[in-house]
Each structure stands twice: as C-alpha cells, then as structure tokens.
Image (cartoon, rainbow, N blue to C red; front, top):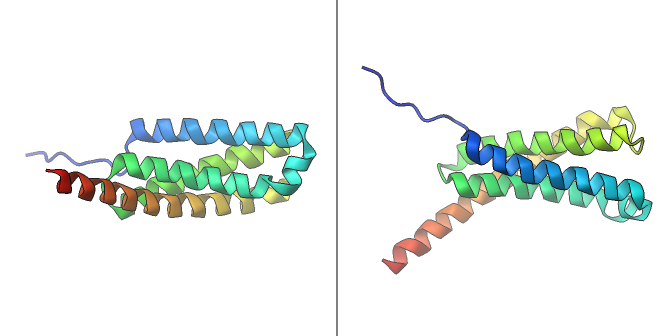
Length: 132
C-alpha cells in the first residue's frame, strides 16, 4: 500500500517566489549599474532584503512548518543570490570572487525569511481561529 508523501518543497509556490525574487534582484542590479550611487548606498541591503522577503513569501504561502519554510527560503535565497551576484558580475560591477559569499549570505537570509514567514502563517491561522 502506497502512502501519499508530501514533497518537501511545493514547486508552484516556489516558482512564484523565485519569479518575484529573481526579477527584483536583476532589476536592482541593473539599476545599480546604471546609477552607481545606488550600489554604494543601497545594493547590499537591497540584495539581502529581497532574498529574505522572497523566503518569507514562500513560507507564508506554504504554512507547513518551520523546517519546510526555512528549507524553501534557503533555496529561494540562494537562487536570488546567484541572480544578483551573477548579474552584477556580467555587468562588470563585482569580481568573480564575490560570488560564493554573496550566495551564502542570501541563502542564509532566505532561510531566516522562511522562519519568519512560517511565524506569519501561524499568526494568520491564529487570528482566523479567533474569528470563528
């Protein structure tokens, strides 16, 4: 007898969060290339914030636990980091040696965003239970 096993990562939700994160990361890097003042003052914070927010969006929509939310956030954060650092490298703004560090930082922040997203899902569920 087969038991239905839920996948660790929901590909539909992952695709939506990845689309949002990667498009925003590439847009930020192109804007930083066009306006160098943005890169000096905003790029690093923006990259990290977008990765964390994409992880939060994934986990909030998934709402299946802290581990699954953090795992999905980790994947999304790493993908956002690759998109941001890769785009910056292709445009000639960052050296290639920055790629591993940028991806690791974004992956960590995506996982943290996933934890906060699961917490937000728990709060949403709790408020809905109070209304009933």
